[in-house]
Amino acid sequence: MKTYLDNAATTKVDSEVVKAMKPYFEEKYGNASSLHSFGSEAKKALEESRKKIADKINADPSEIIFVSSGTEADNLAITGIAKLKGKGHIITSKIEHPAVLETCKELEKNGFDVTYLNVDKDGFVKDFEKSIKSNTILVSIMHANNEIGTVQDIEKIGKICRSKNIIFHSDCVQSFTKEKIDVKKMSIDLASFSSHKIHGPKGIAALYIKEGIKLKKLMFGGHHEKSIRPGTENIPGIVGFAKAVQIANENDVERIKQMRDKLINGLLKIPDTRLNGDKEKRLCNNISISFRYVEGESMLLYLDEKGIAVSTGSACSSQSLEPSHVLISIGLPHEIAHGTIRYSLSKYTTEKEIEYTIKTTKEVIERLRRISPIKRR
Amino acid sequence: MYSEKLMERFRNPKFVGKIKYPDGVGEEGNMRCGDIMKLYIKVKDNKIMDAKFETFGCAAAIATSDALCELAIGKTLGEALKIKKEDIIKLLGGDVPKIKYHCSVLGVETLHKAIEDYKKKHKSF
Image (cartoon, rainbow over all chains, first blue to last red; front, side, top):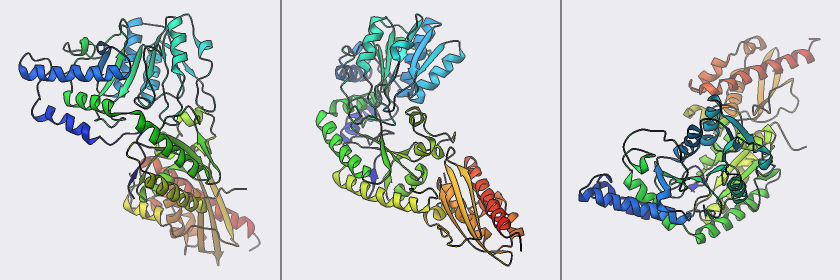
């Protein structure tokens, strides 16, 4: 049974999204900067889409800038602020996505001082307030973690930042449309969102920039996107992104959550397994489970053989041969990190697929544990 | 990423298991890297008559273990000690990803340990 459970990597595009995008390839293909009717048609679609996305996070449409990916949004937010300030201290966490971590590492090379906050065993950032210095210019903490699904209390972090006049960025790529995001209530200054994680097309994303927050652009060119991000707007992508946002709803979130819990309960019945990440404050579609005595890549490939697509935190699947930095940060020993699988669900996941996945995982684990020289004692 | 030959061996390894009364046992690798191989050999008249493995590791590690057993069986101890990582890679279809070469090295080292173990136990002969 073909079962796609890697929705944290990317998602199937909703057919309604495809339908909404279609006219913008073949009929309404104008450049939104052009004065003629083709251009104004595109411009209208652009601004309507911007509004739909702004509404979802309680922002003003003028505060949304379209970019090409979540990675670009993170780069623009962090480097954009750092370049404007010129120097100073940045706080982030050890479990951020590489788009944030690598950007911060790059800034370190350019003289910025960066604190990478530790997290507790469930993945919540520790000692945030203590790490603030007099020259802290920026805090970047993700809303929900892509590997273990833990949802941070970014409202609390945002409020502390606001009270100390520190700019707060949050990578909301995984949480968007799954967790409620209100940029005002949460005191967020900058936030990254991506389309392809929410059944929209790839190649389009957005950065929320609170009114009054200034940053340096990274690319130079025309006057698109308030001159912050030049380049002809990807209208089909933007229309698709907005449609995906519009379709997303709480009923789906609730249904996915129920299936998630069913899958968690089924998998935890396998001996010597543990759930990673917080049980309660957890993304509706994320399951990260470590199976002892077996290795993740082998599990992934045996599951793939049975039609089930998942991902792993094992070193063997990475280029570095180091296991996932997130799993190590929450204190998992290497051997347990190596045996970790992430299942991520979507609205297309069915009860049948959940049952099939539980049954098949059980078989695969038994098979691999028979091969393994490390056994239960 | 992997060749069909490697995947076939990974899916259907022929030499998985233990030997009840092995003449030599070798274990190599570490948990940090995520690869551990254990090899059991049966030796008669200086010849490897049987070999079985247990491996914790990725597809390349499991396929390597299986290929190693196939290469070792029927060889004299002297010949078996000459098995190189290249021989294993060749049996796996020739194109193991570079980053997985260490798995083949692991196979060779485990075999050496098993032979060493055999020699230690059978000094008197």
